[in-house]
Image (cartoon, rainbow, N blue to C red):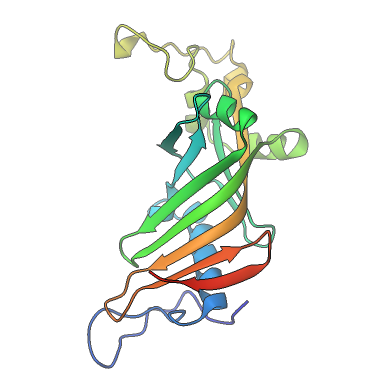
Length: 209
């Protein structure tokens, strides 16, 4: 990993124009910068990386995508975490095919990350820790008696029952995304930079933007 400091402001090029990230021509630093943005996305609710998109494959073989909230990041283990409802379509989809994709884009830095992931429902101590960390307001989402996507006659027909759903825990499930690949794209007026990091093969390569 590079020793580049990622909390520093981007450097202003001498020729003028938008600031250039310090990892501009450094493969390892670009990878580290990407992970730093993911880590910040967990902690900073205003970060564009706080609400990425996750894609899975339906039973018919079609891709489907939705926005989730990033709840955890372990850059050393190459893992991310988000939470969902056990009755949601993505759970049935990842059980049938755990391969998925995640998309992040920060318009301010003009950095896009496309991740190839393997999705896993958590249980045991990992489940307990994730549930214990949820806030009361978040738990209300899992107290709905109807499953996500169920047809209703009116928006007012959504029913909540904390007791029947065990405060929502009965329908809560944390999902771990094992990051297998990261594709980095940095859009810069000086020249774009694109790279692929394959963590399963421990390789990194520049790509044509």
